Structure formats: C-alpha cells, structure tokens
Image 1 (tube, rainbow, N blue to C red):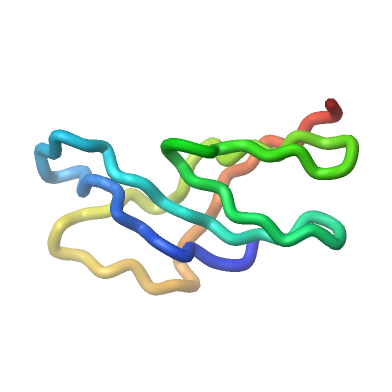
Image 2: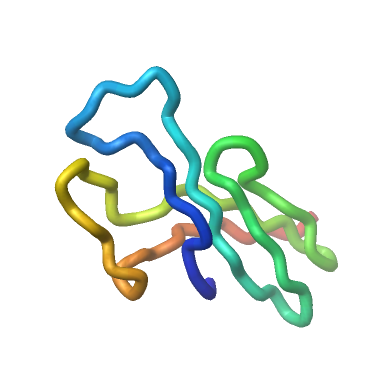
Length: 79
C-alpha cells in the first residue's frame, strides 16, 4: 500500500446521497495499480486477485486525516 490518492467518502457524521469513493495506490510485485472502494475494488495481478475491503480510518466532517494515518485493508487470494 503506497497512499490514498483520493478520498471522497461520505463522513460518518453526515447524511449523504452517495457513499463516496476512496482510491488507493499499491504495488503488487512489479505491478502498480489503483483500486477504488466503490466501483473497482479488485484487480487480477499475476495469479492473484487483490481486493480492497475498506479504507481506514473513517472520515468525519470536521477532521482532516493525515496521509500517514490511512490504512488499506486488502484480501489477496489465488485465482
């Protein structure tokens, strides 16, 4: 996991008509890829499938998340 490229998720303390999206950049072996939390949460890399389960921490409307506080929870399975 390298970084969160974009984070437009709906804050946990707000009501939104759209859940939003988080985009994470990661490197798997020699492949660089981006996964989106809503529309493209998984990708095939070599003989594996990498799935973005969630991005932590949750967003709150009055809090800024420092870049080094982000965590991506991933599942990696053989195809």
